[in-house]
Structures are given as C-alpha cells and as structure tokens.
Length: 442
Image (cartoon, rainbow, N blue to C red):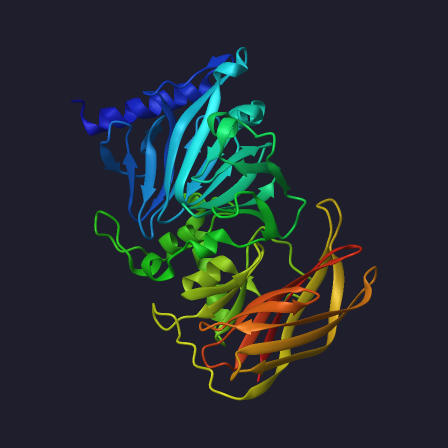
C-alpha cells in the first residue's frame, strides 16, 4: 500500500486531470474521482459501493457509488469536477449514483443523486447545465429535475420538500417511467426562483406535489446543542467557526472566509442579545422595508436559538437556556400586545424592486386560557394603496402560532413566559405578494 502522502497526491492529480479535461467525451466510471470534500464539520462517513466506510476529512475524494452519511451535527461540502457544489446537512444520507457527461454523445452522460434522508443543497455545475435533461435527484417519494439551478431539498420516507434560490426545478411522483428515467418528468410541477416565498411539498399520503409556504430547511436541520458542543471522530470540540459553517449554506463558505465571518457574527450577536425572540435573516435575502432589527441567521445561531417559524428569507428564533429549549409556560388570562417592530414589502418578480409598505393600527390579542390569538394590521404602499391584514388562529403547546382563519397566512410564536410574540405574514395582492414580519411585547 502506498504511503498516505503519496496516495493523497495521486488523488489530487486525478482531480486536477478531470478538471483540466477538454469537454469532449467525459465519463466517470465507478472508480473515477468525481468530487472532493472541501469542508467537513463534525462526524460524517463515506460509505462505498462495496460496503466499506471511512471518515470524511477535508480533501477526501468521492467516487460514483459513494454515499455521504452525516451524523447529528455533521456537515459536508463537496465540490465536483465540473464545478458543481453540494452541501450535505446534519443527519442526512446522500448517494452519488452517476456523474458523467459527453458533449458528443449526450445520451451517454448522466448525473444522478439520491437523497435517502435529511437535507442537501445542490448548485448545478457545467455538466449539469449542459445536459439538464440528464440530471436527476431522487428522494424516497419524488423525482427532481433541474433547469440550471441552485436548490435545497429536505426528504424522508414520508415527505419531500424543495425550495429554489436560482433557476427552476420540477418535482414529480417517483412512479412508473418517471422513477426509471432521468431529467424532468412530463407531469412534474414547476418551482422557479421567481415564485417567492413558496416551496414544493409532497407527502406520501398525498401522492402529488403541491405548492406551500416556504420553510427554511437549513436552520431546521441544524441541531444547535450538538453543533455547539459535539465532537468529531478525533475528539476535538467544535468551535464557533464550526458552528457558523454548519449554520450557513448561502453562500457556501470556504475555510478562508470563516475567521472573518465568525468575528462579524459574534459582534452582531453581542450587540443584539436583549430579549428572548429574535428575527434572523439569511444573507441572500433582500431586507423588507423597515427592517432595522433582524440579525444574520449565522449570528443568531451562534447564541443557541430554536426555530419557531420561517419562510426561507426570515426565521423567528427563540433563545434557549444553555442547550435546552425554554419551557413554554405563559400563565393564564387575556393579554393585549403592543407592536415593537415591523417590516413589510410587496414582493414582485426578481427583475422588479420591492415595494415599501408601512404598518399602522396594529393589534394582537392572545387568550392564553383558550390558546388562541387574534391580530389585525393596517398596511399601506404606493401601488398597494391601503389594505388590511387580519387573522385568527391557535397556539400549540410549544408556543407556536398558526392562523386558522382570516385573509392572510400567519406563522409565528411566543416567548416562554408569554411576554413577547412575533409572526410572519403573507398575502397575495394585485401588485404581487405582500410579506412582512412583526415583533410584539407587553
């Protein structure tokens, strides 16, 4: 057996040769290197086609047939030979079933992933962009085709959900010819980046993909307590840089950017540490009009929060006690809340600017005895004119708020002591989609 240093050099030469290859016939047999791990946080294994497994380390090479299994708190970034990027989130299992491309014989190429469980993000590379009809990501329930895309998928045996950052995807039931083929299925449902605030969701009992309000899969998949205190297979404690890397997927962070990002995030966390509820905003999300109080999601996650609600751009986070969620014990009676922060805009297609929206005459009443809430906002914008947001709904045992009636979609939550509240709202209007977030206190 070659010494480890020589093996590592050989593997890197193999990757360099593939990257330098002229686009003619480019194929990837089962023993060819197709990707390299560029960032590894926590524990993750490569499970090879023959059943052998090994720990994933930075620089580990990946071949067709390999599967990445991340454990609780584990996180892996992969860079493929054509420039494609894949991020495998904690507690996930993803396999590379095919990775090949031929410009002269496109029917001979195929890029095929399988997400058995968990969350992954995929940014299409040169090969996938040149042969979109030969790119496929399968989950236990769904077949996903791409159209030159950056997207994220969450899957298990009971459901599949996908959201798009750029480009578009199609999602179809993994049945019949669709399950055996590649690319987009004929009956697939389209989701594009222009469809702001939406995702495609497919449930096992449902059988067909449906549009739904977007969730922020990346925060939901991060086990904060483990990310802060877990250890890797060499028993090294995960530090703040590891936590930030695990929390951030957009853009995919390189190791050279982590130190500066951590310093900035820690400063922002310390500057915004008052209160129990916080709004986190992803770096790629355009701020809503009036947003002077949200913080970067990366910073919020460094100080251990649990997620109460989210729409893919913003997420409502509740501070934990150490590594444990705060027990929801709000007391009894009826309370009137005062608005302490609000931001709203009318969101239009990607090539049009957001329309600023102001909020006034805001009310929120919570009946803790009945676990119910009622809220009303008056909104106004240059093209929107005057409108009203009105909703009523329930509060579950964890303090999460969901609207059951009214003219708007609402999701949010309360602090453990019931003295703070916050919610997202979304409503279709003639000029686009009205979206906003609020914070309340009493």
